[in-house]
Image (cartoon, rainbow, N blue to C red; front, top):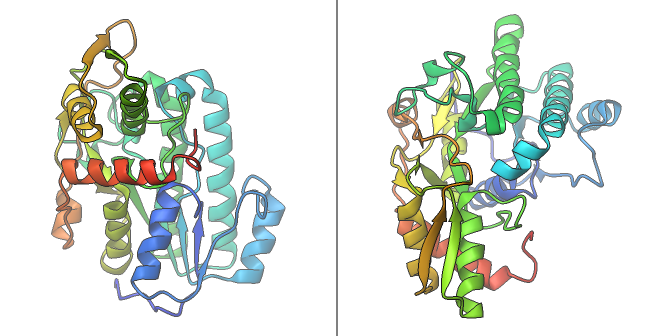
Length: 317
């Protein structure tokens, strides 16, 4: 049965310097966890199987959160699908096998809402997995994450360990990737509009038509949901982590423009891909377990813009 985590337990957060991992670290520190462990890629390359096994045998953590992944936006996923598939499979397999080798009692594997079919019924329920073709622009990444979910389910069946999977929606917030080639939707919009405002540009051109709908979740809310699931959920099925609310890309662009103070024209380039027409998660399982997001999209974007401005010299660009 799910129970409150020991605040003195050794907790390894794989990928602790990324958007997701750093938010998890902040949340767990805030909640009083005293023994958090993280390793940079220079310290531990998770694609090196022997090194990962040796690390786990030495550490023997009580809790593992697998947040490490090779991630990127539509452009990066479309350009380097083999890299996204191979590296993510290596990371997941090595970490999960090493955790199994020392019988880690609690483990949370984090994936992405891109695991679901491109034309899944909206809002997307957990049982939509493997019921249709994926979005082609990120199918390689999605396949890797689906393999991770099945790995967790297989460990539960074969070894009886209460490991679980969480599938966050589109995330944003402090620590995001704001680069021109590697960023996701919201950091790309923030960088574009902030730059346009600072340069005095008369207009901004965004990819696509602006009509697709997207659900966005502040990464600190995601971290709170993860801790909640580790303490309150024990099931085979992956759990959707999101807000259950979506907006058109055009609406999001308008919010970003208002928050950063850009007053020029907003144009759209329909020759560029839109991606999935709509993606919003059914978060009924998460809410029935006792947790729901309350932060508004305007509050979250304003917080992220503030962070970006304070850390612009150090952000990933």
